[in-house]
Amino acid sequence: MEEITSPSIAQLTPDELEAPPLTLGQLTWRRFRRHKMAIFGCVTLFLLILYSIGGTLFISEAEANFTDTGIRLQSPSAKHPFGTDTIGRDILARTIYGGQISILIGLTAMLVETLLGVIIGALAGYYGGKLDSLLMRITEAIIVIPQIFLLLVMAKFFGGQVPNINLFGRTFSGSVVVIVMIIGVTSWPYLARIVRAEFLSLKENEFVLAARAIGTPTHEIILRHILPNCIAPIMVSATLGVASAITTEAYISFLGLGVQPPTATWGNMLEGAYNYIESAYWLWLFPGLLIALIVLSINFVGDGLRDAFDPRSRAA
Image 1 (cartoon, rainbow, N blue to C red):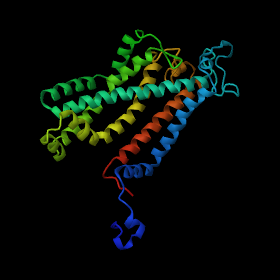
Image 2: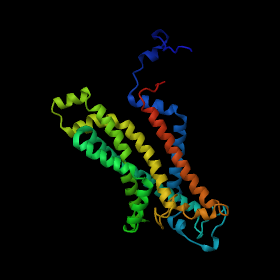
Image 3: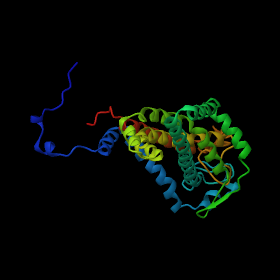
């Protein structure tokens, strides 16, 4: 096995000798861009977001919701590239506006999940004792309950209790808020345990002890000294949380308990498509393909971030 040696000073060029050391951000970016699948994921993710947002410049929401039973279940054609659904709506237009809601659900559910997970994990890890025991018992209680079961029960109970919302000139089903909150509230335990472990390992470090010794307030120690050192696992978890939220929404929407019409998502477009798996493949192919692409892209980006933030990764 060949021994890998670093170049000696004599082998370095004058420019390399005079070059300033790389910052943490530069090292992280260098590691990230070496991850080819992560770059592929970024490009694909950008194109999907562009598709969902840019498509609204050419197709209105009224066209996406327009029904014409005379053209129901038409196969893909020049006029309807993705075909039409069971009540004659254009699937291409539906995927554009449905993509916005699916991405919105993924991002907002991730924010709720991250906020709860960081707060609970930080409090448990920093203070310890009885508070740690109480918060961890609550965390474990939520973990042992199957998430899909909990989602279905909560979606059934709260689904029709929130009225439709008018925002930015668009009408959103109140079920969007319900789904976001349910996914966020049931997804934070894993992140909370990660943050707790990071706080437990960092709170006895010299820089934290020094901050306590000079009388730094507790909230500043948590927010300015410990939390920034936990940002790597939090970012990776948050990134993967977006993909998980989009997939989870698709699960429950497929079962008819997710986002309700008139609001479209890639998930609820699959509802009822199982009756036409062979006769009308376009009903499930295009929404399903978009879900698969965005979830894979986000997972690739998450893998790239995990490697980029790993201090044991080579910087070359």
